[in-house]
Image (cartoon, rainbow, N blue to C red):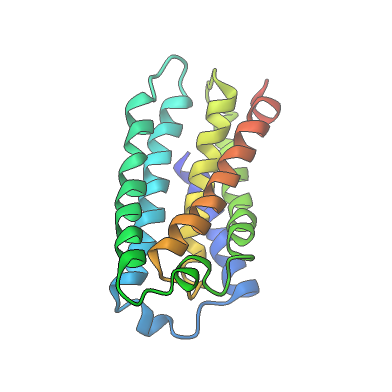
Amino acid sequence: MLAGVAGGVLLAVLAMLLLLKPRPDLALAITGGPFWMKFFYSAALAALGLVILQRQARAGADSRSPIFALAAPVVALTVLAAVQLSAPQADSAALLMGQTWMICPWAILALALPVYAGLLLALRQLAPTRLSLAGAAAGLVAGASAATVYGFHCPEVAAPFILVWYTLGIALTAGLGALAGPWTLRR
């Protein structure tokens, strides 16, 4: 399964580098906290998704604990977003919409495709029994991994933007994974 994630992430990184390009101020951006907030949010969701996926890949494994753990990064980012939105003189529309809201979730979804494909190849060698949940977990890992990669291109760093648009891209990928799971994982 790790090989599927690694291969897919490598392809997503190549796609980002060749098609989207890293943000021009990346060297400066990585020195600031907002970039790492975005990175750790999506990376935490990817890591938790991988735990869920590993459990879903085995018949009879319980995934409830890691599913509940998904709330931790979302709640933490929600608190940060609320703080940013409630600051005096905060431009709520700019914090929420940024400049790339129309592109962000779709770019994440597109970058997630190679990761999802790699995970499907791995899952077909294992024994998932709840195919929709396994597909959703694969989509979660793929979407969150893609969001992490996309963060190196995306200039947006406001917590409200990340909470809404990155999470939407991840959720779209997980939802598509849930829909495709029974169809793609059935033997």
